[in-house]
Length: 337
Image 1: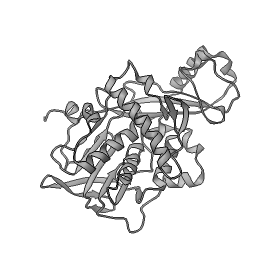
Image 2: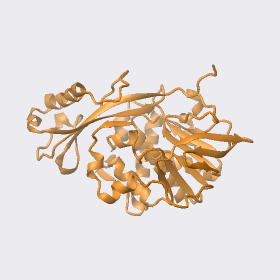
Image 3: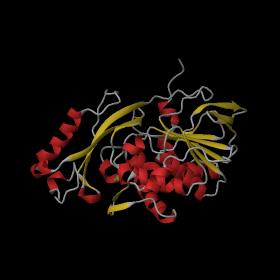
Image 4: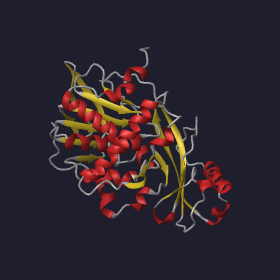
């Protein structure tokens, strides 16, 4: 979830904005080969990967607008090396593969996904533009559709219940940020959300000095992107001006000349996470035809195409890719009460 006013929607053109709010298309396939629940970057990237490997008909369902959750408030910085020494080495290796997957997706997807190269080991995207570009070429995307439950029979999801009726998919992927909470799945997964503030300046011709390189990213029009914070235990869905002020003060300490630049955007997003801050990329336990990915914390944008490719490969071959073994669901499953 994102609160406040992020810059990303304002960078989109009218066509891209419309793609984030499709509504329910006519003649929506109720028995797709793949049903993706969740229209953030992970859901849309997964649908794209399934399409690229030829898994058949694909439908994406999103309860609000595409990118309405944490995806729409993320920084969009794709920089695996910033995680060296912070995250486990196998997770960093997965991030590196996912950055390569971003480049491959940008090249192979019609119209690209808006990837902007920064260095050989880093890039960035406007996350909403990437989602819109993906949605433009997906066969069926429906927004404003809430999944209310699933019906499981004979170790398979037989139907997915929604506010517009039931779907009978052959395979299902839940890419809902936080783990899916439907009675029919009986999942108990330890999870949380971590709030973080971000801000963006007005356009400026000032160039940040090296002292500010760790706190400022220059984006389109010379704007300065800053953040985000880790606001532990703050669960209120509001932007806190005092937190944004401290964030900007950190910039001014490293770069006093930035005091002449106006801050135009402040927002906060709620990053879905698991206690160990690693994602889940796994099959839904006890169900043969469903997968889930959740809890990507601060790496959802970076890891989206890598996660998507792994899920699509698993669905296509029946074998779990080796690189996602560290992200098994079992490590965060809560014991039954």
